[in-house]
Image (cartoon, rainbow, N blue to C red; front, side, top):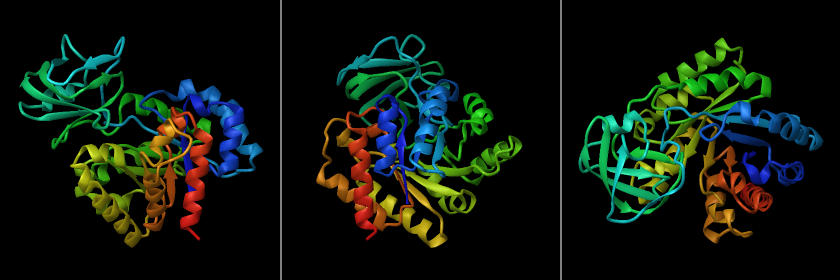
Length: 325
């Protein structure tokens, strides 16, 4: 079984990477929605791969999580406080958002931000600006995820940033590509053709299931991808949260029936971003994910931004191994 961390400041140190490998880590994810391969190159070459060699982990994985068609808030000079009941502009003269959001959103629809932490309702729409009311408030930061609840926004499979990162993927030892917001087999074929043209046929594609189109075309995605990733963050944004556990179970069962590996990710040990010990619910979630057949588990904010990255990996590995007994 594989255990993945996400690269970030807390684990970007030789001693921490050594401890993560000793705890059982077998690979690391680079989230290219927040950085680029150029910026990560020194860390990968000087810290990650040397740590893997010191640990004797000859088949360590490097997973590039592409930006893909994911929708995010643009760069903000400072956090923007959103207060419940206030009105806020998205687009021209307001908070920068992708053109796809402006074109697709309609009056009465809700816009989820930062995996549902913030929620807006569209009051008026135009091709250049949306007037919204804050339903659920809090501080808004740059580069947070966006989605229009119940609506699919038409976006390209690969962005220019994705293509630039893919051109460099081979020289840094990339083994897997996490493809976000996969909508059907065609998205995977576009990525595979791109990898083949770059001499990267050996790189595995992990298709992230994150929204309704992916669920509607799940069987063809299972047939086309090397692995699936049940990405519960944005998947949970696309439906009422109480429906998510059943969807997760269904995806897992269909992967098992097809003999297709899958990875489980998002908030496995979320509380450990701030606490050295997880909740009982979190370890139960991990345990049940392994019983459902997960071939790999991935930590995100726990290692990318959390205070206890090594302890989080230890709990992840020990809990999973307990389930495998």
